[in-house]
Length: 315
Image 1 (tube, rainbow, N blue to C red):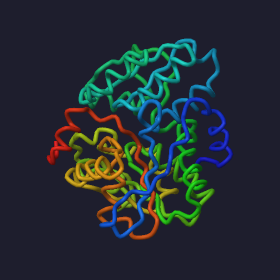
Image 2 (spheres, one colour):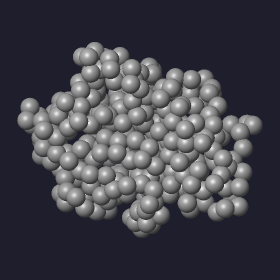
Image 3 (tube, rainbow, N blue to C red):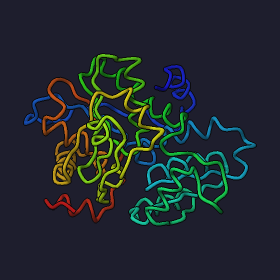
Image 4 (cartoon, rainbow, N blue to C red):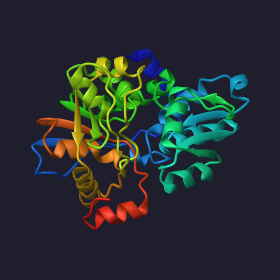
């Protein structure tokens, strides 16, 4: 669990970079719950990742940063680190898997970063090995860095400040850093709120691990929900996430596509696949009734993918 004091410190550290995003109620009378949207897609980089990346880099000494920063990301953390590195005046290199969408790769370059594209296995090795040979710089882990998780926890603080007693909060699960950060904040500031992770059915290692009571590796199929899902939970994240969540939910790709359409039609919100996971699970009734907050983690969806979804199909 991330201490509340670290989350409060992060809130001060990220001021001027991350914005305080709104919490809006979704017009969804067909659902059995009151659904609220925490709109992290409205961050300057279109994703919550700016919070953790900025906190990590602003709390690293200039001497350590001299060689630049490195991260491993499918896209959103890459943009967060590139943004914060540009602000700090240091180079940024991103190790990306070969299925990363071009929209996110273009954004890395637009923010002044460079990327190295590798196979999914090589990317996973870089993630678990905290870097890759031949790529120099301070490695900012997209998930397991405590400063990153503290930055993510500021979302939980804002939720509680805007909605004092939520019944449940639904958090997209990719590596567990977002869930750990927000879950830690909720345990400290809204201990009665239920905390659920949400994964795509095509890659739900945390749900499988929670059901088994121990980490499990699963079959993982990459999909348009590129910001969530994996083949396994990082060993160092399993105990952290397990302490701060109450359950794990999943959503099918068809449900996620329908949730993206619903957000666009009812709220005029553009969400990427991972950002719509919570809404998909909430509308399906998997989180129960009452006041449910869905963290719309990002909106960086490839336009061709979005066009397919808005036309009524599932990519």
